[in-house]
Amino acid sequence: MEKSDKTLWELLWQYDPNGLIVVDKDMNIKLVNPGFCKMFNVLQENIIGKPASTLLKDVSDFQKAWDKNIVIRVTEKEYKKQNLYVTKVIFPIPDQNIIACIMVDITHERQRQKEMVKLRKETVVKVNEVVDNQMKVAQEIAGLLGETTAETKVSLLKIIKMLEHEIGEEEDDG
Image (tube, rainbow, N blue to C red; front, side, top):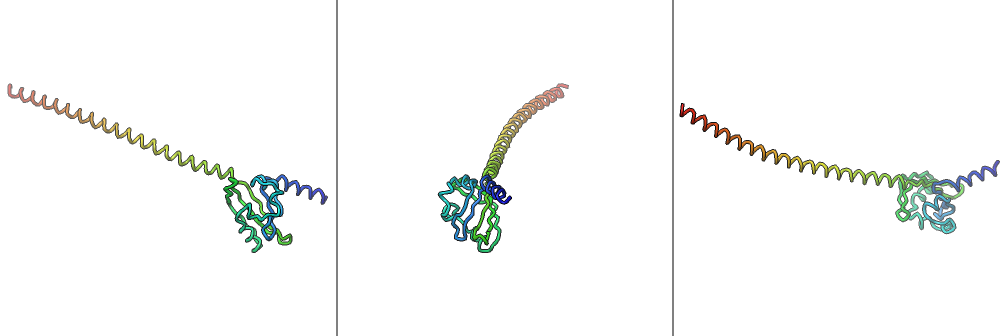
């Protein structure tokens, strides 16, 4: 039973799509799983034994988890070189003198959020353009209406004057 359990844990380690990394208390990489290697585009044999800071740059959360013996949750961390966004759970395992970290790739979700923000901005620009165009058309219509109203008023005033003149002449005749 114990052998099959070990095989199951090994399978989980191998097939977990999350990045799993284990460092020692000196912050040197002890283990990584294939998910981690894929995320960071590295080969396991090239990074085992190396300082974690060479790949992860900032390992202060690992150090803090070790020093304070606490679990640290990082909601979002960007690794620009890899074009990667992850959430991390970092936890010490004191009796083994190691710190483990589970990294969940949220790059796709983050890119989707960026695309939504971009789409919203583009929509606002388009709506402003439509409103501006409608305002121009409304102003043009108002201008034309104003012109035709003025022309109508002038024509009506001419007709009124002509009628008044005719009425005045009829009164003089009568």
